[in-house]
Image 1 (cartoon, rainbow, N blue to C red):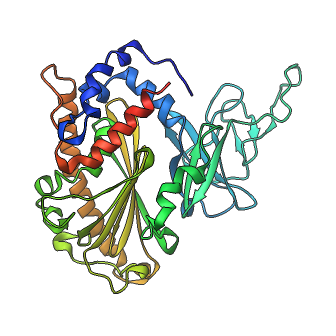
Image 2 (cartoon, helix red, strand yellow):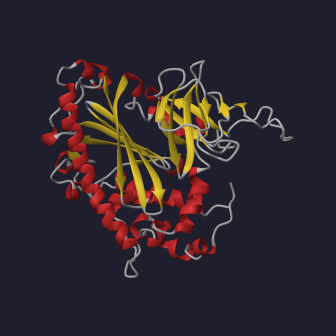
Image 3 (tube, rainbow, N blue to C red):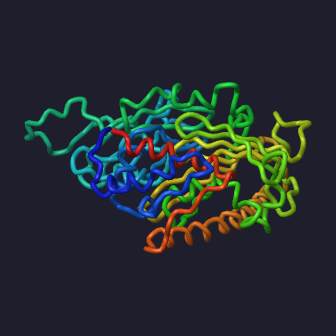
Length: 386
């Protein structure tokens, strides 16, 4: 999708040259990238309408007819379990006037537009258009725009772009050398999805989630003192993968006050140290995380140039759900997560305010920000291409 790039965006190219310098000379992006409506529009076309996006967990729609809806950079999407068991997705927009035909989530045999009652099957194909018998327009075989849709490790990925690279190629860097051996979500169960609104541009949150530099400082009172990234407290080793991906192992105790384990050990980690932990990121907006007793998927969705919605999927081994104390422990776990996310949310909101200031100048990057730079430079490659 080679869209015309606004002049305002082109004017920034000279100002991002320092970001592409080697890490020891690299600087962060200019503030415009975090509030400009023009740049947000470019990101929508060149990133979110072009690549593969993780939109759901299969468990959320287990039965034929189960569906859920969401908005991706303000485009309406429906994800539906088909009668044969496969998952399909389409742009949730009636072919008559564009009204969304599905709302929220639920189970249906088909969909009916609430405006003029045009009816569709579960795959988005038009079945009935009342009082249109005098129209000479050929509507035979019409359907709401279908999206590419695949499932991977229990997750639903979609793409608006019918010519997007094959998903197997997209995900290959993470499958190579069993890079995500620890992300065995097929052997876990989804407990809950948290949805948190954050007052910042989506990239600030994506960068924050891979920024290890701030962890021992900002999160000192929650989990910062329980995390180690390398041989020393001042080192960080990370696999920088193609197209902005990254993965690394760390030493980190389970998420809880004091690092106490609250749920059974993930089966494939039995016998391993209680500080076993790994993380990975999939461009543009997916962040995967493992502790000894749990898995999480953090998905960052832009809702405007300066606001973001964070979806956190919480997954545990099946044995955890048999524990009579599970519900109580889950509430404690969620409270801890809300606390640490609150620490980040306050900080990125402060960053967001700085981005529009005429006094803001991008600062140099630390050697601990290698993954942050990797994500940013890949982002620049994408939005400045073509």
